[in-house]
Amino acid sequence: MNLNNTQIKNLLFTISKKNHSYREIINILTNHTEVQFVSFVAIDFSGNGTDEKIPVSTFIENIENLLTVGVQTDGSSVVLQNIATLDNAKVIILPDLEVDWCVDYNFRNLLEDEQTPVGTLRIPSFLVHNGKKVCSRSILQKAALKLKEDSMKFLKEHPTICEEMGMLSADEVESINLTSATELEFWVQTPEDTVDVEKLSASQRLKQQYWKRTDGIVRTALENTIYIMDLYGFDVEMGHKEVGGVTSPISVTGKSEHIMEQLEIDWKYDDEIHTCDKEHFIRHLVKDIFHMHKLEVTFRAKPIEGVAGSGKHVHIGVSCKLKNGERRNLFSHKDLTTRYTTSYGLSALMGILKNYEVINPFVAWTNDSINRLKPHFEAPICIVSSLGISPEIPSRNRSILIGLIKDFSNSLATRFELRSPSPHNNVYLILASCYQAIRDGLWNAAMNMSLEQLEKEFSKNEKEDGIYLEQGREYRSEKNIFEYYSEDERYRKFGIPPKTVYENLLHFQQFPDKLSVLKKDDIFTDEIIDSYASSILEKWVNQLSFHMIENNMKVVRSFSILHDNNQDISDLDIVNWTKINALRWELMKDSVDKKCLFSRIKNALLEKNYSYASDLQLEMDEKMALLKTLYTSYQKNIF
Image (tube, rainbow, N blue to C red; front, side):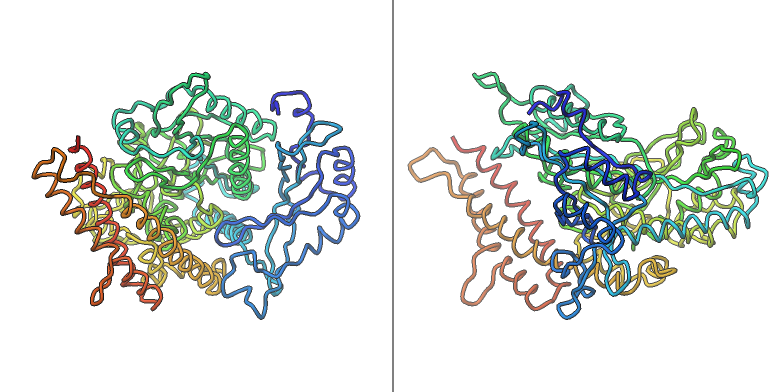
């Protein structure tokens, strides 16, 4: 259907939180017959959204009960490991009346009489078990509330921060506001196309696609997506090509073929809950519109080995509203050109960096997300930050984990950019864990140091002691950490990054003091941490056993001999194939007295020897990379 017609503009796209009285909701839905269903969308610990579709007539008839009591489910469709158990599975999905609601349209299903798409009103909701909210949205809600309370208390007990912001006292402050934004990257391609990794890698090295003009059907799909997003009021800032992709050829029919491109869409910041709700909704919207144009979309972090992955940078801001109506940024010093940031800003950043080992399990939570965080692909791997070459020269170092972003023309734009998250990440839990870490920094760094001391400690070298930050570590670099430091130097100064999901989950056990930061005020309880860790461990086991090994087996089988004795072959061909075949046997072929690597991994997982399985996974990855390199060289030498 034509997404630019007048009928589309007249559809209902959102119901503001200001219009959530029963009478207003019924009136709106009655006047918009294109909305045929209502769905309660709660987010579990894996970031999955529920979809409880209710006919709109049933919803209107039972509106008071549904909005105040919610709907009941048995918990089988949500990830709440060890919480919603087989013998205690009752889970209630309770609508959130304090946020905006959006209508999700099925552009492939049109109402016959009006030729308009069928809509589903998606209401962000909470999961409730045993009378307690147990879901990603509720964790973020509680963490945000505590950070706001602590920030107000901090301003009152730390009057110098008010002076740094150009205020007389905390009595001027009416409220604390948290803001966030995301940058969504994704790959698009024509269905069933095979990936030419070598072409993609060469295109990336030559920077052939960097911010190029989009063409053909990709351009149409991107423009339609931006247009529809604006109808929702999402305030799109830009959509553009990213680093990855190759130029698609034009067929004899005039259509683009073999499309393989990486795109990014950015939209305006919002408060913490709305930012996460929007991001979850927009991912589905992007897929739907690109599918209409016969293009596949993947939000995987590393869909193509050897080529840049997709990120979802998360921006974090804190501001306050004054009683006179003005707004002040708690990260912006009154003199932006002589100070990097305020005491509040530096201590908040220090809190995230010091406690990142227990934040990272919410970031690098799948094999895919771990694979993206590798050197030389513009993805961060070390716990290190950047403030800028000097206060008046912001650098925006792209090799670091989290950095300070400043705009001298707009003090409200000062914020932190966390570069490690990827498209499928659960932003609710990432923000919640960062907020807990910020609270730790406020009370244990800023309350014990002046701004000058904070700046000195933040820039300390690995041999210097810290009042708050750890000895033997550095936390700031204005250099390209991939080129300026060797791997040994990076690991010594900034810590050793986890190489598997299992290694990352071990951080919850290895850093109990940092875990206690997440658990403060029961934001992340023992029950929640156990449930999350159990679900991610299970996901890792299943991905490794049923996806990674199975996919690698297909690759090994596809690497067959290309020469025979009647061909023109060289001794190099024989040597290469001998090495390749030896690796194939080592990876995949069992014998009576020896198990291959794939079998040993599966056995280790069955025996729950996860540490050994994790080590074997690294060995498998290394040998598979070598096998692919050898086979490529072998192929190129065959006539």
